[in-house]
Amino acid sequence: MSIAFILLLVSILIVAPLATYDGVVAHSVIAALAAAALAAVGISARAADVNLAAQVTRRLKLAAAVPAIWMAVQILPLPFWSHSIWINANEALNQQSWGHISVDIGKTFAALAFYRANVSLIVVSLFVARDRRRAELILSVLAAITALAAIGLLVTRLVAGPGGFNEMLSAVSSLGLILSLTSGVRAIERYESRQSEAASQNLRMALIISGAGLLICVAGLAAGATLNVALAAAFGAGAFGSIQVIRRLGLASWAIGIFLATLVVAAAMIVLWRYDSLRMLSPFLQFATATSPEAISVVQRILSDTGWQGTGGATYAQLLPIYQELGGSVTKAPSTAAAFAIELGWPVTLFTIATAIGLVVILFHGALVRGRDSFFPAAAAACAIILLCQAFCDTSLLNSCVAVISDAVIGLGLAQSVSHREGP
Image: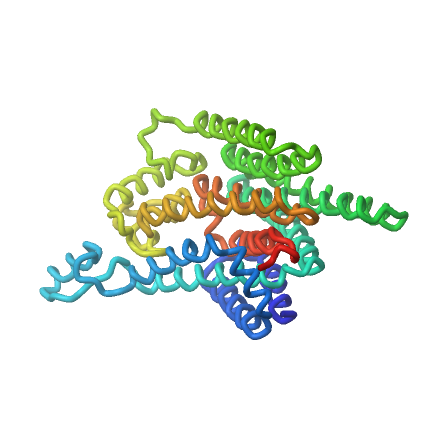
């Protein structure tokens, strides 16, 4: 398992430059590291680890497979579901051949490979983070990397101008905010369980480092985040804080229910406040306020023409020349949710959103029932909330940097959501 652990750390350590230099090469490197790490896990995993991983992910395995299965279907030659582009090509070339749902098989195959790499990193994190010391090291590395990436993006933004890299800066800072808070809570809990002079010194140092990371991430959010993204970060921080309040106060079950219901209603009211029903826009576009009107118009037209089966994973860029005017400036989708709705179709997109909500519930429940180390699943639940909300605000989730950090955090939270004594 040590080889898989090292490969996971390497994957995390290399993500900082990917915030600004993402692309095919970065995806290929991440996929190679993920495949090697998963192979190492398969060789060294014990039966008890496999059983425990199966227990933790029993509600998620099928859900995680659905997008991969659908992208594979999009690549297959199909006589009845093929995209209209293939029908038009047959008419123009006076031929008859089976087409595909995907308008670009190569792009969809690459998207499938990258999706599998991300799932593999979650699985690797789930296995290697069962050990508490490794889990703590992964948390420390994640907090440090997000802070360093935020610093790099802040500097790059100053060089590139006010509009440069705002999307990535706010995304990395949002996740770093939660990770810095988690590092601080971890230091406090460790001090409470080992009160001594050395523990007191370690606590002060840990809080200083966590505080510095927190300030960096707050600065990143202040510099790059839109109001919607800032609210997403606030939702995540609120979820993390609510778990700490519940555990510290030792609330009864009925009090927890009332407290959480109040938070959910408050969050729903904020979302409704930000939802402008007068704008005749798809819900996938309502919260992408930093996007140009041209990009919104283009995506609206693509969404209206796209069937329920989508156009194929990662094919949005191939559709742009058809829908935008010559010399148009649009280069990417306004939001991850909009890109998924176009490429995968709205049924799979809604299923993916429902899966993300289910993941939040699982992690949140794990944080509430977990004794020691509950801050791991609490951090993962908070980050999952941020990712879900930001999927409607921008396309940062499609970046390798954000994807790898998210994979490691979610795997870490799942691994620590069940104690060693609770295994089957």
